[in-house]
Image (tube, rainbow, N blue to C red; front, side, top):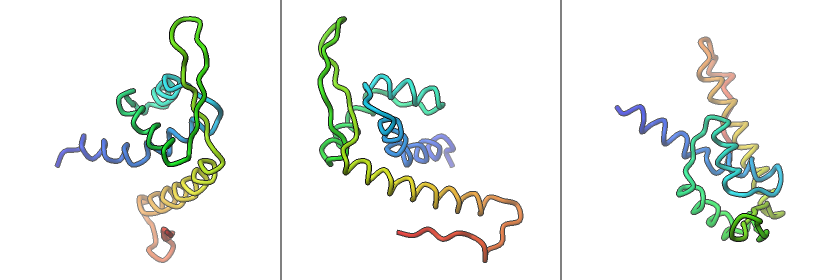
Length: 120
C-alpha cells in the first residue's frame, strides 16, 4: 500500500475546511492562504487553491473584491458570506466529532461503549 497516496487523500479531505478556516479570520489574498497553510505544514499549490476558491464562491460561501495594487494588476481578496459562515460552523462541528472519534479509537485502551458516534 502506498502511504503517500493515503496521506494525500487525508489532506485533501480537510483542505476545504482549512482554507475556510483561514478566510474566516478576515479578508485574504490567495497567496496569503498559501503562506498560512505552509506555515501550518500543509502544502497547497496555487493551481489547487484557485479552483477550490472558485467552487466555494460559486456555492455562495465566499465573495471577493478587487483591490488596486501599487506593484501590478488589481488583486482579488476573498471573504466569507453569511452562508459561508454558517457552512463553516457545520464543518467545525463535523471536524470536532470526527477528531474526537478518531482520538477515542486510537487510544491504547479505548472502550467500544465509550466511542463517540459520528452524526450526519
